[in-house]
Image (cartoon, rainbow, N blue to C red):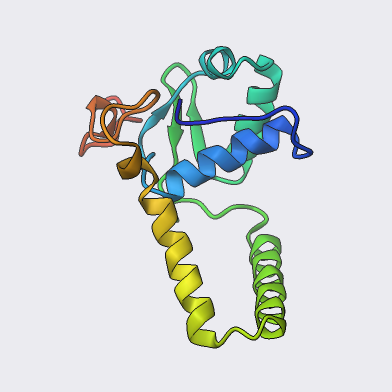
Length: 157
């Protein structure tokens, strides 16, 4: 399964679903235009309540990470197509988190180059997730019929 949740964690399950989908997109496992499982399909796969998946999908749609098209399904949104309504707040939060990381790195005695190398390695960890697992994987497939050159969200797909 390309997405995992652990109800024993302190992070709410809907947030784990959101984080997992965002990570799959950031790593390239899911690409813009890829179709996601329906709410009920994903709930069954993860063995969680469908309302939990619905809440995650609603939040992801509000953040412009996914797009729900009635009668067609739920798709990974194209980045930059529509700006999230809370863009400034999220950029500020990201900047604050980066400052916190720089302060922690300073107190650990890490140099700028070391921190940047860690950042690059973390990015590499994300992009290598799907290639390390190897072979066919459960869930949405990269490069399949759902990843055509044309936009699958339109009738011309």
